[in-house]
Amino acid sequence: MRRRLIPCLVAVLGLALAAPAAAKGIVADVDDHLVEITTDFAGQDILVFGAIDGPGDVVLVMRGPAGRVAVHRKERLAGVWVNADSIEFEGVPSLYGVASSRPLFEILTPDVLDRYQLGVGRVQFRDVAGDVPGIGPFRTALVQQKKKQGLYADRVGRVTFIGATLFRANLHLPSNVPTGTFLIDVYLVRDGRIVDAQNMPLVISKVGFGADIFKYANARSIAQRFAYGVAAVVVALLTGWLAHLAFRKR
Image (cartoon, rainbow, N blue to C red; front, top):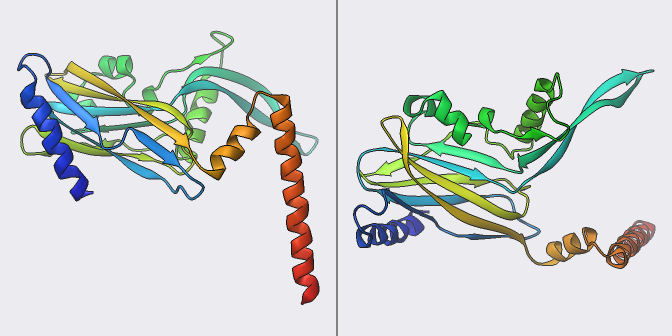
């Protein structure tokens, strides 16, 4: 990590010096804009680095592609747990992580934290049906489930300064990270206000044999999905037959 950090910081410092003094208060980048997920992917840390033009604090936010998620409430009926009420939310980030140079509540007011959705408890998403009464427990359950899956960071990460103007931070991608285009927002904070910002894309893509399986399993074409189903059945039968032969010889 140190070997990657030094050239990265040198590069971003060069960009900061080359830019006009009044143009940008913050310049940032990531060590890799493309993360390739293979069958043995076990998670990865994304290095975010950059420079600011003077004293201040830095806040980073990483959000995965937003989508629609249904939350069900289970009830016990005749000794069996069944789905009772359910609510669908839209605009739900598939992944969320935040890091800052100091605790968020020390550098920004609650209004600003809400406006920029800084902190996992301030992530906003809407229910599809409109303002449904009693929605609070469903929203809480959705966030808790995302935390349990490791997709929503339970703690605020740390932005570390190297000297007075250079900074770095690690944002974690879990092993079950979804694919798609992610956004990393970098904010410069001074006197309780966000005075400058920059956003960067991060593409996460499946590659190799796992990508082919995912492609056919989620294909829009009925023929491709049918071929995937047939192939899955054949592989299962072949595996069972080989296991039978192995134990039979013993």
